[in-house]
Length: 218
Image 1 (cartoon, rainbow, N blue to C red):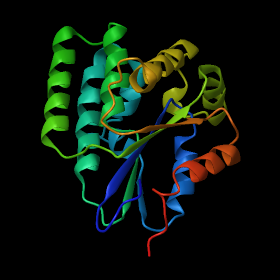
Image 2: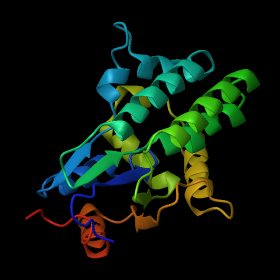
Image 3: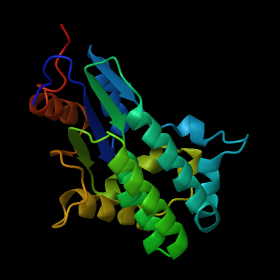
Image 4: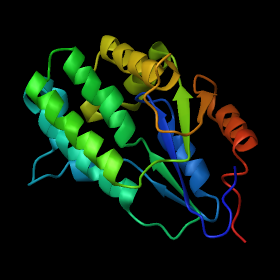
C-alpha cells in the first residue's frame, strides 16, 4: 500500500464534530514527507468580511446552500492542489461534504430540490473531471454522546447552538456513507478507528495500521 517512486497519495481523515481529527492530524504532521491540510475554516470565517460558518450555524435554512457551495469549491481546490510531499493528508473531503453535510441539509428540509440538484451536479462534474480520488479514508468513528460532550467542553462559538440530535444525524450519515450496504465512497479502502478511545490509543492504532502510508521519506 505504500507509494512507489514519485507517486503521490492522498489520505482523507473523516469523522463527526469533535471526533479528534485535529489532534490526529497534529500527530501525523510530525512525520517527514507528509503534508497535512486542515479544513479551511479560516477562509469560511472571512468571506467578503462575513463569517459564513457562523451564519450557517445561526440559520441553516438561509445559509445552508451558500455555505455548502463555498465549502465544495474550497475542498475541490485543496484536493486538486499539487503537493511536493509523498503523502497529502486532508481533514475531511469533498466527498463528506456531499454525502454527509449536503445530505443532512436536504433530508432535514433545509435545502430545496433545486439547490440539492445544483450542488449534486457540481459535485458529479468535479469528481469526474478532476483527478482527486484519495487512496485511503481514515474514519474516526465515535459515538454521538461522546463527541457532544467534547463539543461542550471545548466551547467553540459556532458549536454553541448545536444539539445532540444534530450530532446524531451527522453520525448516522457518516455510517451510511462509509459503512452502509451501498457505499458512496471513492474507490479506496476505509480504515475505521475507534475515536471514543483516548488520544494515545487512537494514535497507536493509526500507526500500527497505516505505517506503510505514513513512512518517513528518505
